[in-house]
Length: 239
Image 1 (cartoon, rainbow, N blue to C red):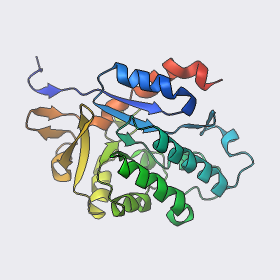
Image 2 (cartoon, rainbow, N blue to C red):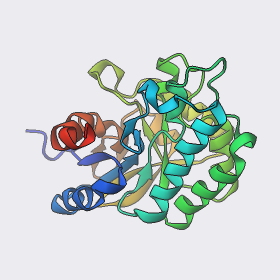
Image 3 (tube, rainbow, N blue to C red):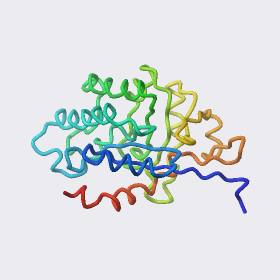
Image 4 (tube, rainbow, N blue to C red):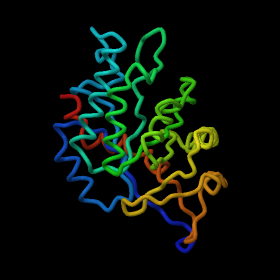
């Protein structure tokens, strides 16, 4: 009934771990995904939300371990389009102040951002930090600004919507932030190729209108991936 009006694009989020690299590549290459989001949820087989990840580390040591893991990932793994929630770790640290201060991690953050840019990839602006009362999106404004200063242009939006009610949640705040930092476009992906959509156009009802019909912002199609990754890799992730 709606085939001439609605285009549905396929996306996947992969929680990268080095020892699963071949299997992750096999899954990505097996299916005709339009968009692949890569994220870090686990470092050295320990889930970041697990308090064990932080045991024995100062805040700086734990955060550096996390960002170094992302740097290693983007250096060795290229089969993705954008990197998700770069400062995800701030959700889980049990410190007086969990905020990532850019200057404290400038060396590793610049290195991973440059690697992402030089590889022709992008980053996700994930609005869930607002919903989780973190007072910032992922990544925070200073990291987002630095990405632009280094030449980064590819930005996708995500709401980490594990529930239907959170799809596109707080996207208007994301648009405001991007415009404040002088970004002009957000991206969706079609056949692994970025399509640049003006922020003004993307604001129109959150769902962006395009010449061939309705384009559903690529990031909002990814809400099912956690279930998929858990289904495929659960036993190995717990090993």
